Length: 238
Image (cartoon, rainbow, N blue to C red):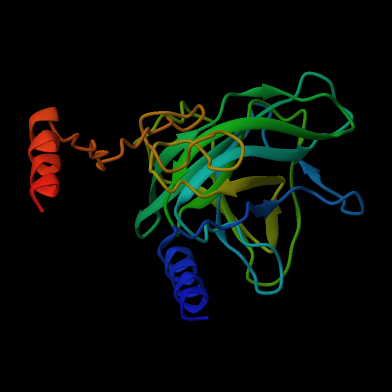
């Protein structure tokens, strides 16, 4: 009984020591099928950040450190539209910096389109969008507290400054992203991009470690024939 209790305690201790991963989380919101999204305001497109998220609706702020592994947007019926996910970090006042961006992807029209990405993010980073030109839906009506800010499109490279020149309240960008944990901090999402989330040097299957036994088998010592003969001689004298 004591051994069983000790074993159960050891299992519980190991479980407590194991790293805690969280399930994939959706950040932001693609335009619902029931919404009436609007096209971008300029013919050249725009780039913008979701600077505010109202309560009771999906937030565009990253809730915890991790990796964005893909994004979704609802495409309009226009052909030739192209969109990319952009992540911003607030600096000061109306100033932001670009964390990173996905590839610019052309959108199959009239569909909820999904695209892969791999962007390392920190808690508090903000989702944003860049649309190449106005032939796509950019945003839709949100809830009180929602706010977006935007400027003409630019090369959204990591570290690029972003100071929006326009803002609008009560609107939401037509984009959402999937956030996964990154336990080993290798820049790959633990659920879909990393088969070994505990070892940063590999994203394939975890290396197998072979543990060598420290125990050595003792060889039985065989008595020499001389010792055996001596013992037998003593027995005969008695």
